Image (cartoon, rainbow, N blue to C red; front, side, top):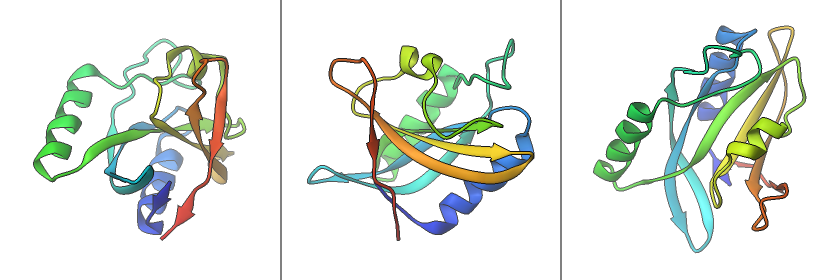
Length: 138
């Protein structure tokens, strides 16, 4: 995955602002010859009301709105991002249970309201886990 630094900064700001709860949003861009290039990040509310400190849920209407915006601008949905407050940037069992194939899942770790790392993941074909995806800043 290739992504501009200013988009990463924007996600970090959101993750810090929502701490100790998870922030979430959608990654939008282009898929060219198997390479994902993120052009936009679209923050969404976290609709997971019961345990938003360790789970996220993107509201369906926000997903549809993002899909429409992406189409209008000649892009496509490439994946999702969310934060892990006081936990490492690796998928949880909840993340695995609700993940969709081919999408990127960028996770930002926030420790005591400070950036602590990030990784991106793609669901394995057998749905038993994730492959770590390289993040290239552009």
